[in-house]
Length: 176
Image 1 (cartoon, rainbow, N blue to C red):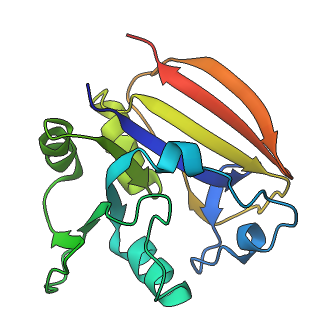
Image 2 (cartoon, rainbow, N blue to C red):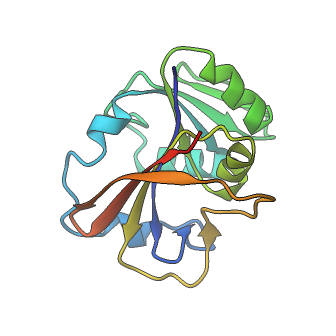
């Protein structure tokens, strides 16, 4: 069965980016292995992300596939803006839960890229199968949060814990 997987890094206090959507604090960390994430990301056939994340990555690395571990991965970008689709990118105003359910019926794993506006509704709908959390050795104090408020707890089982250079990676699987 296809899995919906969050794979991403946060500060120790749970922020993905600064209030200005800056992630220099993460991209400038030394000694992150060149092959970090390749094993997981190579199995992703689609990604769901927000427009801000998509625009930032497209500007930061315009000539690099969004997922170098699988350059044919299809991106679904949630936006209210009317944009023309690209060969590997679909811009949509679909509800994230509806979109995730549709993609889960297709082949391959779905990578959740982004913060609380994407991850929280998927957690609330019990659609997130695995979490790959990389914790960076920094406390930002403010910014864009990974986690939003949930009406009920959602439990996961710790499957692995290891280091990726300066990052601690924790791998969790949803309890059924």
